[in-house]
Image (cartoon, rainbow, N blue to C red; front, side, top):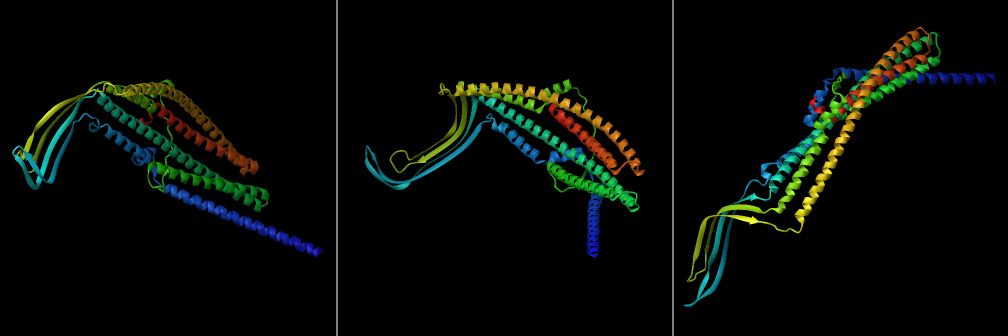
Length: 462
C-alpha cells in the first residue's frame, strides 16, 4: 500500500513539473512574441518620416472630402450670383417659320367664278428680337443682392467646415502623438518588468527568493506586454483615421511630432471681442440678417409697375393660289416698342409675401442675438477650461517629477533587497500613471487652446 502511495505522489509530482514546464514555455513564447512585435514596431517607427501638423493641414485642405464638397457648394453659389443669373442682361431671340399647303378650289369674283388647279401656297418668315426689362419695382436689384449674400453665406459655411476639419485633424494628430508617447512609456515599463523577471529568476535559482516573486514578475510582464500591444493597435487605428481626414491612402505609415507649444496671448475680454467680429457662426447670422432685409425689399416689387423695351427685325412673305387678286407679298424691316404693365391687385399675394419676409427678419434678429450670447458664453467657458487645463498640466509635471524620484529611489532599494516586489511594482505603476496623466494633460491643454481659438475666430490665422 505504501508503494502505491509513493507511485501516486511521484506521478503527481511529475505532472506538476510537466505543468510548470508547459507554463514556462508558454510564458517564453508570449514574451518572445511581444518582444518580436515590439522590436518590429520600434524599427518601423525609426524608419518613418515625421509628418508635422502643418503638413497634415496642407494635405487636408487639398484632399479632405468634406472640404472638397464645400468648395463645390461655393462654386455653385458663385454661379448663381453671376451677372448672367441676375436679370440685368437683355434677352435675345431668333425665330423662323415656313408653311406649305396644296389646295384645289375655285374663286368667286364679281366677274364670275373661276376654278384653279392644285398648286403650292406657302408663307414664310424670320425675325430676331431683343427684350429688356427697364424697371420692375427694384425687385431685380434686391434679388441679385440676395444671390450675392447667399454666395457669402456659402463661403462662411465652407469656412466653418474648414475650421471643423482643422480642429478634427489636430485632435486626431495629437491623439497619435499621445499614443506614441504612451507606447514609449509602455516599452520602458516592459523593459523594466523584463529586467525584474530576470532578476527574480536568478534570485530563485540561487535560493534568494521564492517562486512567488517569479510568478508576480511573470504576471507583470504579461500585463505590460498586453497593454503595449493594445496601445500599438490603437495607434495604428488612429493613423488610419488621420489618413482619412487628409484624404490619402489609409495604410500610409508615418510618425508625428510630439512637441507641443502654447500660443494663446489674449485675455478673456479680448477673445470675446474678437469672437463678436470673427466667429464664423456670428458672421453667418449677420449675413443671413442682410439677406432677410433684401427679401423684404424684393417682396415690395409687386406694388410697382413693370416697364420693358423691345426691338427687332422681321421678314415675312407668302404666295397665294392662282386668283385674280394678290398673288403674293413680302415685308421686312425693324420694329421697336415699350410695354408697361401694372398688376393693380394680385389677390393679396404681394402683401402676404411681404408679411412673411418681415416675420423671417424678426426671427433672424432673435437668432442673431441668441447666437451672439451663446458664443460669448462658449468663449468664457472655453477660456476657463483652457486655464484649468494649463493648471492641470503644471500639476502633472510636478507630480511626474515626484513619482520619478520615488521610482528611482524604490528601484535602488529593490536592488538592495530593502523593498518587496509588490512595493516596487506599485512604484512602477505610480510612475506609469504619472507619465500617462502628464501626456494626456499636455494634449488636453492644446486641444482646449485650439477650441478656444476656433470660438474666437482666430484658428485659421495659425
